[in-house]
Length: 327
Image (cartoon, rainbow, N blue to C red):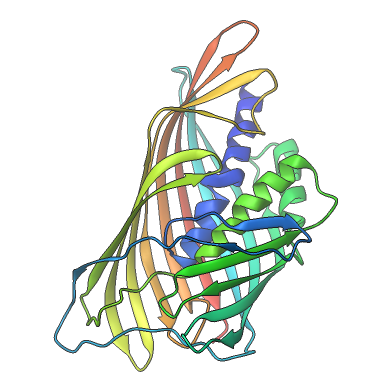
């Protein structure tokens, strides 16, 4: 049973609480919005933009920050993620696991800039893999690698305004893909509709701080997200941002495909904090570098539908992300 619970937890991380924040953190963006993900479909969904609240305009040397990437200039970034998990089951001593590391290469390119400043762009997963650890069951490792490898070569497109707020997003999935893999890849891909951090409309200087608060849904889990950004440095088109993103979720039932058969999973509580720094150029789509850390705590209960036995699971997750792009 413990092995099944571990595998279930690994799927939960892959499906939304690990790789989802992983990709979102990499580009440190606004709260997720609904994006079109379809099997070889060209359809695009319009995205509702969250409100950016300026808290502090910064020093007197202020300027209006806007992005304008070069057209048809391919950008590439390598994203590395390491994850540690501590899990206790129904009051038993906690077990610690070092989860497989994740490696992902992402390519992006701006294809057109409209008269109003909107940026049309394309992206592709050039490569993706997991790095084995001795703590991970082979069954879980193989399942994670099988799903992540299906992302290689997957393409999509998006439109963001010059403040890096998403206006439309599209990604195409392979026609032949199983339901579990589709659900997980959809969640990972939807995070790319946030491909950057949102800038305030007003002119700002070093020290400026702004906030985006929004209810979000990650893999069917409703939660509140509050993202706070601060401009630490600005010179010659280079900007350094401090990022702090907090998420909280109340008790709710979880429809999780990786759960053991015949079990009902209920999320009792969830909270996380993601913080770090991001360095960007205003003429690029992808950050030059990112270093971010995620710390999360969750309490779930799994009910055996046949015996009505309830198993309580407490999970602590630590995730460190590093992103480096070609300059």
